[in-house]
Image 1 (cartoon, rainbow, N blue to C red):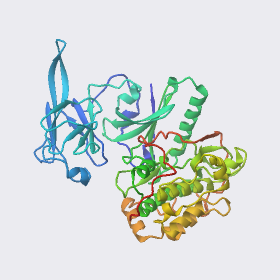
Image 2 (cartoon, rainbow, N blue to C red):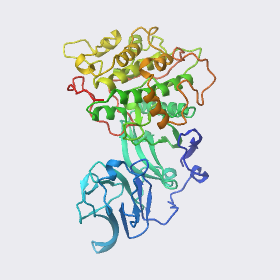
Image 3 (spheres, helix red, strand yellow):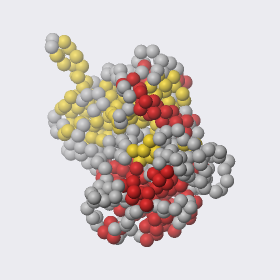
Image 4 (cartoon, rainbow, N blue to C red):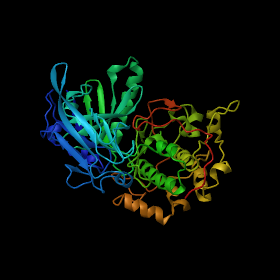
Amino acid sequence: MGEFEDCSQQATQPSNLDASLLEDADETIVFSEQYWGRLYPALPNVQAHDLTKDETLVGKQKSCDITLKPNEVPSHVWVVASRRQFSILKVQVEKFGKCSTEVRLKDMSMNGTFINGSLVGKGKTKVLSDNNIIALGKPHNNVYYFKDASVINSKHPPSIRRHYDAAIQLGTGAYGEVTLMFCKKSRKGYAMKSILKGNHTSKKKVDSEMERLENEVKILQRIKHPNVIQLVHHVTHLSEKYLFLELMYGKDLFSRITNSKRLTESQAKLYFYQIASGVQYLHQNEIIHRDLKPENVLMATDDVETVVKITDFGLSKVLHSNTNLRSLCGTKLYVAPEVLEGGGTRVYTGKVDVWSMGVILYVCLSGQTPFSAEKNGPPMDDLIKRGHYSMPHKYWECVSTPAMEIVKRMMTLDVSDRITLSDIFAHPWLQDPELHKTIERLLPRSDPPSGKRGAAKMSSQDKENLPTVVDVDEITSSPVSAAVLMSPPPLSPRRKRRKCTT
């Protein structure tokens, strides 16, 4: 049976799991209430609802069984929703001479109700199946996931099935996946990251992935910061490992950049400030991330002004004063020159994270990648090793001089001249009253960047120069992040020139 190891005390948003959820479970599925279906939220402020009647009406009208509220859904969804949006019907049908139950959705709206992006149509009905996504007004205005309580997902072990409903797959890789899960008792959503050891024949690779997952657990158990993803708990079942992480509804920074015509400088500054705050906290807690990239920065919501959190600590390492950091690992486009230059033999420091932050900010501000392998040109490795990049005017004409200057200081080839995290926060570009007001509103209880929430006792000096030993040699060109929500194609180094916006 699966073993639950509760980490809820570490979470920014602690789970409501009681002691019964930490016990081994048998195959019996126990429901806390007599519901035949459930609507789980696809947005952070939307409430979950049990379906207990044969017909349930949903809409903005107060007399509806489930009333949509303006503080639950974003304004762009609220304005297209109807007073009587849709009803969910539980009906008896005869199939092959046998009576069975079928769930249907009837569209009653002016602007349309969508199931998995497909319009139902006013006055029409469609079959509603387990884990279908319901959107209002437009195909992508997702509001609810429908869960049919009679459907049991046998893919996961009993100790997970007993307490969680599995929804959609959020991401996938060669050896693992991330699944949206909802706790049956608290109705909260989580991102469950798993490595399924028994499904693959490459034992060496799977063992490596399992080591990374174990490493991630150890690191996440010791940290707590508003800009770092939180581990709620993890489950071990036979040869498989499951991590339950707090759920981020806004996809990742990679998607935000590629889906935008332009990421404004104020947006980039807001996201970068939070990334830097999280990285500084990690360094103060003697942790080097080593794989910072837009895919590993998750957004709390789809709002422009939103909290961002660093995720994916599989390649991260805890520092020790008497050992050295020298492994070749990370994602090539964002990896520091000294990592590539050493080829796994040269000692490097935590300033590799600062370089990666510089590349991230470069991409955010310009929509371009600083390094690309051109036909008949030098390979990307050589460009990175030489720190050979430029800032073409047509992509940077809208960017302020202080912003460009801080990028250059982070992407400095000489490690000793590369800017420190303390100096990043003292840089003129981040001395922005409006930025700090926004941060205070988003994270009202957050410590200032130099604060050490949960940190060990350290000197005030940045810890990026402390070395450590590592045990995994892995560098990738464009890996699929297991914690992202279906990213679009990679950024092109030759995207069309964009108009300046504020």
